Image 1 (cartoon, rainbow, N blue to C red):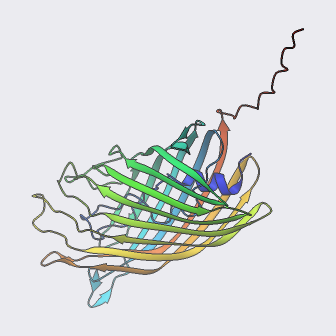
Image 2 (image 1 turned 90 degrees about the vertical axis):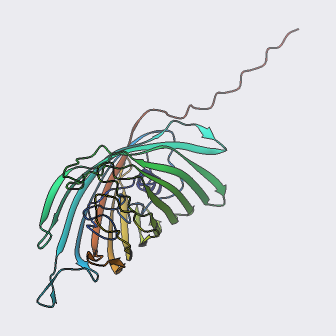
Image 3 (image 1 turned 180 degrees about the vertical axis):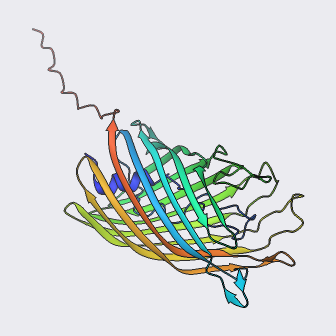
Length: 331
């Protein structure tokens, strides 16, 4: 049996979900942050026992484009709409190893995405995004209900890629390295967690453009009542460094973006499986900067609904304690 706190939380810890949800924000036109803000909501630095766990996480993101670069029509803003639907299937493996005094786990996940952006952008595509994996993360029980976890997430450039600059579909032709830290208080049914992670991107192998570093923090504050868990959540996202252009473009995009969202979580522990729902609304979104002659930057602002089911598959069961043998008595 996997309880709601560990299964819903931990299988998401280390799962960074990709979303084609931020077109032309403060990055190369058409490129996107690899990680959907809020994906670690509900997670904990605590981990379930040895075994292989499977999760299926889906979400929809619905937004409108804002910022000084947002399209206008005769002086009035066009309500350019961004719609994203994604499904992520993945596995968390706990082989029962102890490293540096903590519990070792690994994660692999494959996102599939459909996205649509209305005119004047007028884009619709879909396919597999880059595979995400964590070759290793370690969780420590600090005592008195406090936990800490560190890990390194990696996106491989194996998604659906098309177009002259490699950015006309949901795949991304570059690697992303995502160090992650989670700090939790998980005791007496409480889950108070901050998940902190930053995206560091390599160059687009087609265009040579490099997207700036993006900092995320996802917050969870829930309480378990019987089989139910409920509580407020939030996330903060901020691009902390500027992009680096290339010979494929005649400008350097100096813009950045940030946003903040609040919402709530409800989860139910069925015993063999756990189901959770998270809703968030971006109450603040800001895009700044831009390039003379190339327009100002834009960013979407909207709401997200996440749904996840997770359960233990098998294997790596903890061995029962061995009863001590009776000593041999010689006369």
